[in-house]
Length: 140
Image (cartoon, rainbow, N blue to C red; front, top):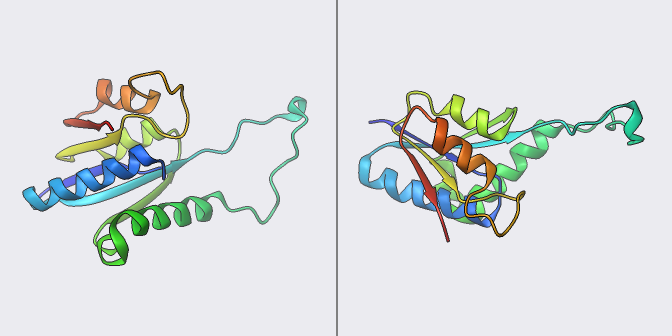
C-alpha cells in the first residue's frame, strides 16, 4: 500500500484532481494525502501595503480552506479518510517535497492563478517536469 499526494487549493480543477485521486486510491489501495500550501504575500516598506494584523493566522485560514474543500468534494465521511497536510511554502515545491516516496502525484491543470488560455498552470507544469514519482494532471 502506498500514498497518492494531491494538491488542493479549493479551485474547481483541484477538486476534480482530488476526486480523481480518491477514485484511483480505491483501485490501488493507496492512501490519499491532500496538500494545501500557502505563502506570506510579498510586501516591503516601499509597497505601501499595511502589515499583517497580529491575529492573522494564515496556517489556520489554509487549514479551514482545505477542510472545506474536502468536505464539499467528498462529504464528511470521505474527507475524514483523507490525510490533510497544510504547509508554508511555494505550492509547486511543497508538492514536490510531499510527493517524495509517493506512488503518484495528482494536480489540477490550473489553480486559482494563471492565464485561462494556458493549457497548464505554473504549478502543474513545474511538478510534471520535476517530480520524482509519476504525475497525473487532471483536466476538465
